[in-house]
Length: 427
Image (cartoon, rainbow, N blue to C red; front, side, top):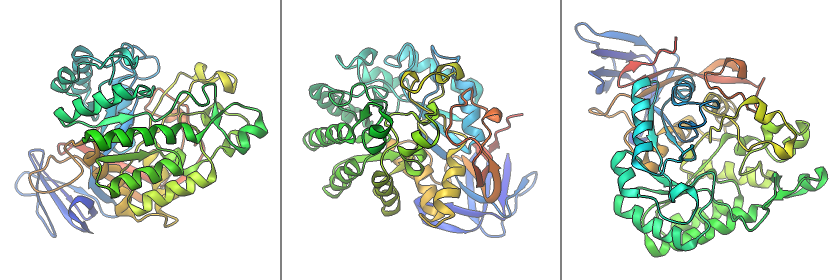
């Protein structure tokens, strides 16, 4: 199979490439990158004029809900949503039912992902058995079955001894430990960020200090153990500063942020009329926190933008704010939001966005992808910075419709995703 992607703006941050270049793919791998290339005998050409061609986008924080909660999402619908959103790969969190805390659940996820083929799926295994925070899970078994990281996401690892053991054990297998950073001793009944707006609205708050304390503790443990530590959905200015300092000291710390924490604040709970689509964990933070995160993506401190795609059934969200589950969907909105609200106003340059959505995630997890050098597997995303889209939940490939961005008109949208050189067709 020979495919020439011609006439596009090829951006590959890992190699410092940003130019109008052709990309020749042979048998699923990059054969050559250059100008005025030919497809060769029997080859096909994909005209990418006016489009941006990048290494396949990777979302390192999604909830596919399978096994056990397929009414919310399953691997087929979740990977369809990924492909529709421009993502060729996703990493799925272990808070399924039962949790991904053993080899058999890991193997199920791997097999189901291979059967559907809309996007690559990298399972993340649980840190503790049953995600109960008591006993370390069988990390080696899960790594052997295909997990690329360990995390109790959905729950923080409250025990410093368990986190210390996890860091040491994960280092042996060279996988990162991903922490849902939240000290449950603060704001246990909180439903939104603790601050001016929680006070005005009379809702119990989740203080930013709960995140800050956990990140500070874990970085101190990382300093002792070494290895790799990743902060999921980082949301506060102080946590960001802690990670920035850890990196400056040479620690193996990385972090991700979400589009909703970059674009919205806690005031949105008021402005939306208590919409449960503004309820997530960590909660939407203050404007000062938001501005700090924007500075962090601009200066290189933040490694990745991740959707934290968390689908829920409509009935679960159609309740009063305090009773609704935390979380929103994001696979089909992340790229458009970032192009329209980060790149178009000049907050970051386009190559930096590609780094945050592709090269950076691959590096943080230590997985293949994130570049298009000769010999690399040809996972490719094509998108437009000019074509418009309107966020229409009813048209999502995901089973989830829970988004605060419904109706937003965005300039910039995905056009095609290719896995190993083959275009993903959603029908």
